[in-house]
Image (cartoon, rainbow, N blue to C red):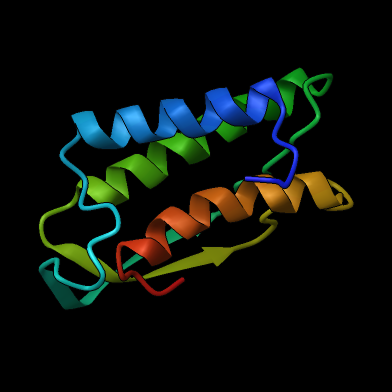
Length: 114
């Protein structure tokens, strides 16, 4: 989260944590989870967008959040996640990358290489 989180930041982080908890995810395991060393997940063009005025791209953000939760719920966990294409929307504004980073941090906290 940013140094001065907004209400949206808080709600996004809370919702992600709730989905992860309900899905039985292994968040913050410090590498204690079971991994398949030969398993990799490929994500293409997430187009993360933090601007709420870009409603079309907020749909892709919701999809990206769901894919992260699905990856964290896998048993065993994949050892790698590879992102192809555009991680962030259009020019990749700083808020877009911050938002993407929060989701990627969930993967790395679980011991998954991104």
